[in-house]
Image (cartoon, rainbow, N blue to C red; front, side, top):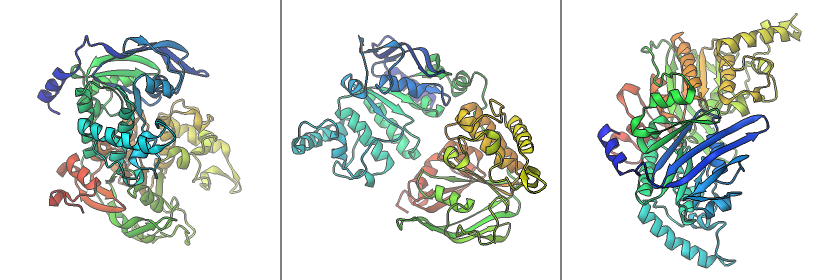
Length: 530
């Protein structure tokens, strides 16, 4: 969005002296010894879009959960439209005119749009009158706020973007004047995100108040009027969006200057390390998840796989990582390797020179109750350096090695004896990355490297991935963050519905073109379905 557009939009926003839709005064909340919110006060003007940003664990979601009645504050006061209001549960929040659209939607997949909208607010035991009323109201809301969706469609048949519209319609049907949206674009294509922003702008024009929780500073700058920054459970600043910048917001969030762009030299690709030909995967329900995927990755380059979650990227990583069987051909350094998942050659992927940072670090990358030093040996416990006389594990050697890796990867706290569950998400990710990257693999598979990771840790993780590339290693990067794909990748392949829709060079494409490919559209034929 250009500066002129920004200034024009700010001119139509709620004036500084506008009455508050929400005021939180002195809100505090502790979970045992952890102080999630510390004496937080915030004022959200009526008819505005108010952003809340902060690092992972800063207390944003806790604060909004208190406002929506999921948690009860230990201290403080909630004022809605000028009136002190008790919100012991979500029903009280709805009654106060507050609606919440969660990051993970709360929809019944085999119910229709209408049935989901009236669920919990039926007018009586007979559904007919409720459905009739809802149909009429949804038509009015759709016209007023550009929230068009087929009321008779089954949720399971709707795109993620349309499912999100249903969540917004649910809140508006319950007469919400204040909408809280938690990370609303995490599962949307760029085009769907742009449409959401148009809807939010329309809601603001009609007098609705929006609270937007997001870690994406570009979105904050594009759509909000005011932004509040949280750090370590405290509110550190509230500023007008037009008077700040992403760099200033990042510094307020982290407490130090952060480089928001990835600085890298041009890639120097070498020989082909990974070849994938006609790779296919069918799940246990008979659904084909990978439909003839072919690509290659060369030494000294990062190939990024872009796409909305659920389009085959996870299955691709699992087959390459050896945890899922498929059909087709996979070659590593010219040698064909097992694709069935049975490993008939007796070698693990790690033995063959493949390291894997899985998408879900807590479920697949770590055993949360085990210590950091134990986690850092998993998969490599047969290393002779970890053995005593080839018979017993040398725990002291493993501990020393883990401590050294933790220092190099700035894991905090640097205590290798601490259980994995006691580290923050960003530091858990560093533990997994240190284990895999330090093995000097020929090929690094890395899925969602910065999911749920703080801005400061994102900067460090990106540097480590680039360091491996510059050492001549091949890297396959899967991420739903298009900014991350664009800034890290040397080549970009876009996946949709189990297929690669196209390949682009970052310097020769843009988010609009990639977004069309992510939605299954052929950008070369003016949006016709591929």
